[in-house]
Amino acid sequence: MYAIIETGGKQFRVKSGDIVKIEKLNIEPGQEVIFDKVLLFKGNEGLKIGNPYIEGVKVKAEVIDEKKDKKVLVYSPPSKKAIHKLKGHRQWYTKIKIKEIVGG
Image (cartoon, rainbow, N blue to C red; front, side, top):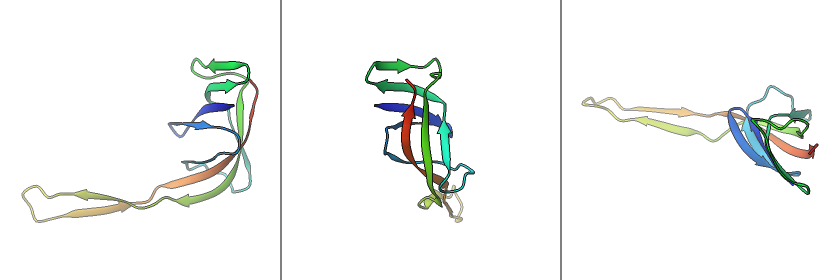
């Protein structure tokens, strides 16, 4: 049994027990979050595809941690100049653990 959910403008394939890194949510670690934007659900009864979302199917998850990801270096090469630009960026993310998929 698995589902495809949408959060933070991205889509994730999740099943019960998975640990997933998603875009930052303003929720404290240890709290529960419910995702109701389910695009696809595969269970014992078959496959359900939403248009765009499936009603009645929700994914319950628990927030484990909020951290910054690894540093991504952005290099801008000079165009006819001797100035090099090197910038770093660390994106915030939220790590969640999928508890269960309800409905279907």
